[in-house]
Image 1 (cartoon, rainbow, N blue to C red):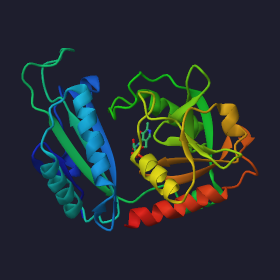
Image 2 (image 1 turned 90 degrees about the horizontal axis):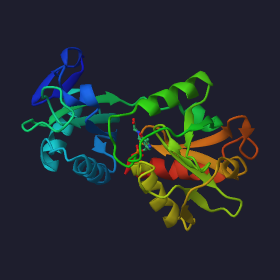
Image 3 (image 1 turned 90 degrees about the vertical axis):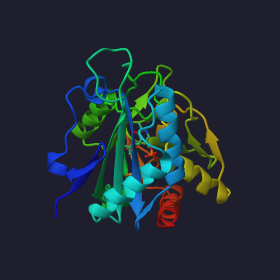
Length: 282
Ligand code: PDD
């Protein structure tokens, strides 16, 4: 079966899916995106993703290519046409096609593309043993809260991680605090058993998985503190983990060359991974 993509109003074979060379996403990264997990045919935490989609569009003053219910109809159709019941749907909107000029075009129609694919998350084996992260300077812009397609620093950071044999790179701001991973949010568990993850502000993407895990943790009477933490604090933490749509809850057992605690996934990370799995399963 060949894959189908949605491109500006049409469902086309994935191999032939194309956008114009003057799409502003292509020339200026002038666009935003979402990655939503699909489990048993349901879009996981759909409302939170749509809220963030609308927020990203609003912050960049890109006109929504269509309303929320139409968007979800397209998403479900893309899933149906690709026979995806467990996997992810990717959606991207840009300011559209216009002659190249930095300022917003007077007339342009927001462009929308969507794709879906079957589940291909990190292996269960990795979660069992825990992942390694490296630390790198955060060289991104000051609006990382917007889910923009401008991901060059993230791309370079993830490549550094790959070359170091690590799963992720944790980005560190000028004050020595971890902001987040290149495509994941960063967490630690302190000696006192408190969960710490950076507060949602311009320095990080407010991950939907992050929101879900905060809710799950609080329901389990765990204390969640939203604040910055340093690399040194993370290295000395009782546990560390990361969250994202595609990684779920992934224990972190090594930061640069330092083992976190005994170098094995800790009980809180494991329990949250299980609880998050149950949440996703609905
Ligand atoms: N990445 N931080 C960054 C920089 C991200 O790109 C992502 C998501 C997250 C986690 O957000 P969420 O829990 O909503 O997936 C945090 C997606 C999955 C991606 O780029 O593929």
